[in-house]
Structures are given as C-alpha cells and as structure tokens.
Length: 274
Image 1 (cartoon, rainbow, N blue to C red):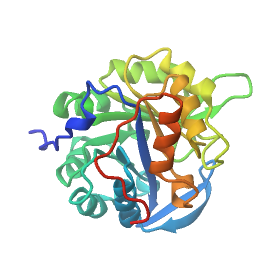
Image 2: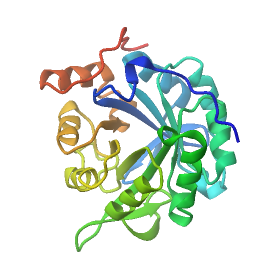
Image 3: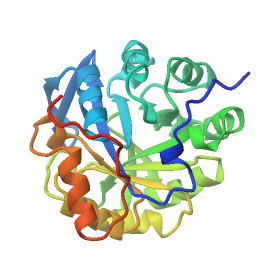
C-alpha cells in the first residue's frame, strides 16, 4: 500500500525545538462538542469554521477526535478534514475509529497528516507497527486516555473514559513507542474540560520513560498551564474548551509562553477574531 502524499511545513520540521500549541476539536456527529471529564457534552460550534479560526490565530497544529467513532466503528470526519486541509496549512491529526490501514489511509488521503489510534491499539497493538511501517512513524500517534487510580498510577481507558483496559498508562506508552508510534497524545480524563490545569504528575511519569514527543491534553486553559506541562516534559500542549468558549486565543497563549522564555513558533501572520 502506497503512502499518502504528505504536506510539508518547514516551520514545523522535526528539527524545530519550539513547543507546539495545538487546538483540539472533539466532534460528535458533525458538531464541535466539549464536556467535563469526557461527560456531559455540550455543542460548542462548527468544527470546520472553528479550526479555520484557530489556524488564523496561529495554532501550530489541529487535532480532531471523533468521539463516537468507536461506537459506530468508523470515522466520520473525512468531509471536515478535506475542507479544512484546503485552507489550514498546519499539520492535522485525526483520531477516532481507526482500526486498520484502510481507515488510516482514508483520512490521510483527504488531508490528515497523522492518525491517532486508541481503542484499536489496546485490542490489537500490532496496528501501531502496521501504520508506522506503511506511512512512517511521524504519521502514527498513540492516543491514551488516562484515569488516575486510587492506589496510585493511571489506567488506560477507551471510548472516552467509559471502558477499562487494565493497561498501566506508563507501560502502555513505552510499548506504543516500541511498536512504532512517533508521538503520544496523553489525555487526563480527571482534568479534561475542567480548565483548572493539567496533571503534571501524569505528564512527568510518561515523558520520563519515552523518548518520543508527548502532547499533553486535559485541563489547559491559560499560558501558565502550558508552562507547567512543558516543564513537566511535554513537547506540545492541546487546548480545547478555553478556545471554544473564547476565554483565550493562540495569540495570548503564545505571548504568555514567550514571556517566561519558552520557545514557540512566531507565525508570519496572526489574526484574532477572523
């Protein structure tokens, strides 16, 4: 199977050590949604238009997650990704319902640069290596939903925190890297949608054991939260609810990180309120 053509982003090359600021867009049946701890979802707007807005604000990447894809056993974001990829020239990652090479190819063919796999990988870890071998590790993101355990540590969950896997998050992250994942998206279920800050202990525990980039997600609302995640080892930070509710934007976030000396990309043009 031939690899899908890749879009090239010189400013965001592998050798660039800038911290990446990512817009995360969770989608349910064509609606941008957001909840708290992956429950109580509310509609937050149009996922295509919001992505374009974040691109013009200076987002380094866009992350789309189809939150009901595993339920329906297919990803429904192809039309949205195709539309956004024609106007937003930053890397696009898409997750949800990706269980084989065919489903990965469908998304890469319409403009996605990476695919994020969670549920299918916990059931058949070989899918990580298959996608990595076919399209390159840079296109393979292991998505992990982490739930803190009362006795300590975290369990990897699936289906938006509904289903238990019995997998230890840190050990699963290490295994995923060994199987060819080029990046790990670690989402704290406990902090998701709270806008009260990220689980820095979780971020530290994962980044300490893997040598591939880690995207931290869950709880970020202001630049201080991103700073804490970066200092805990994250190389990228995903924002969702704070963006969708217009309580911040990428211009403000980038300025806050620059103020404390964290290296971030300087967009050629940042437009707020497009």
